[in-house]
Length: 288
Ligand code: ADP
Ligand code: MG
Image 1 (cartoon, protein in one colour):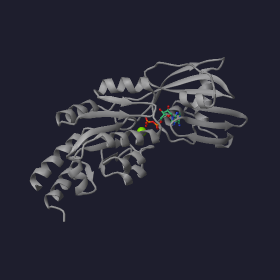
Image 2 (cartoon, protein in one colour; image 1 turned 90 degrees about the horizontal axis):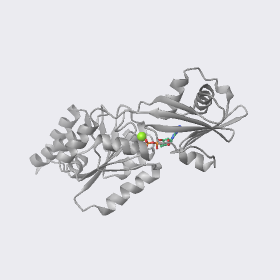
Image 3 (cartoon, protein in one colour; image 1 turned 60 degrees about the vertical axis):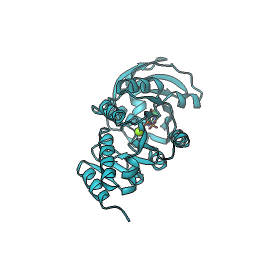
Image 4 (cartoon, helix red, strand yellow; image 1 turned 180 degrees about the vertical axis):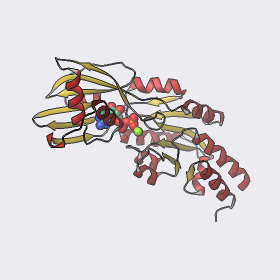
């Protein structure tokens, strides 16, 4: 049977927008020692804006943006949405003859007779296209037209206002390690980790690499310790399922992640995690 005090704890958390799916998860949360956050949509707002377009090999900005927007027509990724918004025009879907989204890489599409690639270094490596290595403050989406490097689009996101506070509070609560795992590039990840005050970060990860990192941390921890993963759910559901405590952001998060998660933060604020830990610990003291 579940000690009655836990219902009080779950109710209190719920009133603050932290939905805990069972008393066992509240108990586990009280023992959190390692917290891993996803980046996009979790520590950052996930609202991307195109901030720069760099052209190469005789292409112009309008062309790059148009090709990229067409190639991203069927993608719902935050990067795709930013590119389509910057393009601003209606897309005639009949032109899109082929479309393939490659997780953690980008997209490949055929627009009438033109082959387009839009994505990161890894995508271009995969298709063996030579390109610039850019060190910019933002996410880089390279654009390739018929095998020719056309330039890149820089897309920027902002950290959530309460993210640094969330990390400070977690440390104050004695959480040993607060880290970030992301599919995004090293430069952006490093910049964000510094701004937020994280202990460590892992960048350029594929969704399955995130699971491996959580498994490695699980292998290193002591019995009573618990590992918490917080994600927004785009590609994150497997990691949310694997962590001792899987937390999903509820407002922007995907349905799959919300279903898999043990805890849901309704207003997407990372600072709700330390708040939840406080409630969990207080509940534990009342129950035992
Ligand atoms: P995160 O871990 O930051 O949530 P994802 O795993 O969703 O990131 O994606 C990792 C990287 O793959 C992105 O930073 C981007 O470089 C590339 N990528 C994924 N989908 C797309 C897309 N539709 N268009 C362009 N690039 C993409
Ligand atoms: Mg994400």
